[in-house]
Length: 363
Image (cartoon, rainbow, N blue to C red; front, side):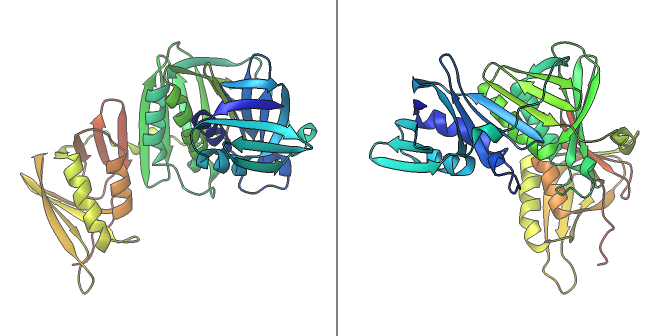
């Protein structure tokens, strides 16, 4: 095999696929990237049994062939090479990478041991705008659990119904819900790992256009004209998350999102760990506090538009900051039933975030 590719295109293709490689595995071939140089198409692929990704690479093919190269090492080399043409060739069971006067040589892994991707026959699916879908995944993914203690809570639930797909994630302390229109009405549901879906969706968003989403048995398939990926679904069904959203929120505040974000970010310096930040709402402003007693403390005021009774409510600093950052709107609306009930944050038409308050600190 021998091909010549542009450094930036090579780095982008290899880097996106390599993000799906496992950190640890007892099967060494799963640490490799499969490069296939054909007469009409060249691809870069990876799999770890739980997911797989493949992307086309625009390049000049001087000799067709297939090789399995150590993935993370190739990704790092490709990223750090200078701009310009990069030549990849196989010589004596090694992959030789040349760029200007730089030469690297990586040992090849056995292609014969590389697993095949699962069949996607009988799939049912629809298409969504790739950028809108990626934005929704990033927003909702903030609320997914960071660990796998309860695997379902580390996932994003995709519920296709009528003309939209609803994305939802919760770690029991917060909940994100977003909706994205679909091209064709379908009915199916899939629960997929949040981190994996976030990495994959960013690549599809970079291409623009639409991404086709379909389900085949226990596999979610994503594809467009140049990329394809599949993800093993997590076991369901997902918890009834809509019950977490309050039916009535008579207390409503609208605030400049960036101003509130900056205040919370500064106060987080004295509200590290699980220390709460609390918000004391008045008619025209909210006083944001952190710290108390003999500890470090701080307080700042932000102008607001407020409807309903005065309210004081506390949140874990990092969860509040994550919630604020998950929005892209200029204004943020925070709605309450009371100081001990879940708060609903909105700012964009198709996304909402629910966050559970903390007990108020003893001052």
